[in-house]
Structure formats: structure tokens, C-alpha cells
Length: 140
Image (cartoon, rainbow, N blue to C red; front, top):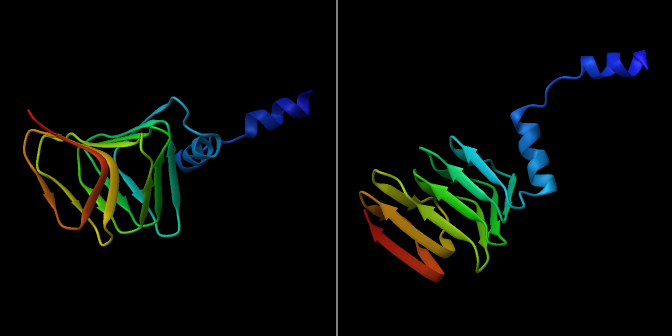
């Protein structure tokens, strides 16, 4: 019993990277993730399956592989930069809901299932963009 307690006491707190990995491994089902910005490195995978990912005061830079499926939502107050691969399904939505000018760019074209621009300013495009289901433009 003493050895178990000593082992538990010597365990380190998991890093943020490990917690994110565990969340990805076990799924975000009906979850909410807040981030200061999301950067997906080359060769990395980020799968949002049914969760709300809220990048508050920041955006997404994708250099790897990003999947937004099973009615997942990505809410950004910053820019969307896709230089990797992005996959989505019919129920998934990306919200651009910042207070300043937001852009959709990167080196690879992006196909959104549903895209909502609800911005006090405007949005700009610097790449080819396809919307397979719904484009919702709102003015604040």
C-alpha cells in the first residue's frame, strides 16, 4: 500500500499537449474546448467530432490534417489559414464571429459544409473557397 501511495505522489501533472491528445483519443463528444489559437503542425492530426472548439481572440493555422465532423463546430474570432487538408461533413459548421476583419486563406483551397460570417467588420478571401451546404452572412 505504501508503494502505491509513493508512486501516486511522484506522478507529474499531465501537460496541456497530453490532455489534448487524450481528448482527441477519447473524443470530444458533447464537449467544449476553448483555445487561445490553434496551430496544427505538418504531419499532425486534429479531429473535432461533435464538439464546440472556440478559438477566442485567435484563429486556426492548419499545416497538417483537420477534420470537423459529426456536427462539430469551430468558432473563430481570428483568421482561418489552411495550408494542410481539411475535411468536413454536412452537419459541421465554421463560425467567423470576430469583431475585426477576418480572412480565409492559406495555400490550399477550403471546402466548408456550413460557414457563418457574423462579424462587426468584414471578411476577406485569399484562396478558393467552396461551401457545400449553407453560407450565412450576418451583420452586427
